[in-house]
Length: 115
Length: 110
Picture 1: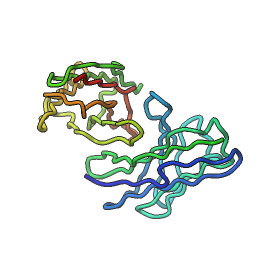
Picture 2: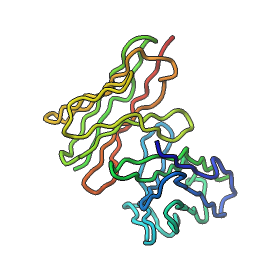
Picture 3: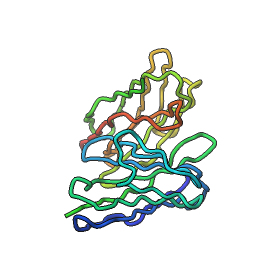
């Protein structure tokens, strides 16, 4: 199957700092990538849809100024958590849409801990 | 609306079959998926079924789809301890997004 990587796999930062997470599709081009957030023992919550070359589409309740998404190429999308606070601590997972079946292949996730 | 329901927990003995069930509300779904998530990891696509199919078998995995009842199931034959994980069913809604169930934690006892 198609491979999606995420970097870093885990990060610890101080409150108030910004953290950038990268999502790469390694062996296919992805015009659409997705960013999810997962709390312990819960399902994935879609944060935003990242479209190559255009602005991301955010889900209701997700602050676009806090979670900056950039999809500058067909293989890379980045999520920047700006001015991170402890409540932003979570598991962030990206996925890339793989045509033609419209399935999504997921990255391994990034564990963010904000102190 | 878009909604997917799964039972939260299933416990089986090693070697038994596991059946994980899922119901959904959106009849416009084209593909339905089963994903596996191990602790601290992302989601691994296990299998998928096209909405005009009733059944799909892939080695130990059997997917059954009852489109009339909007019911999807995943059967794992000869369940092993390595199958212990959380299993999510999902479908592609008409917006192109994946709609996930809450996940079923499968516990396999030796």
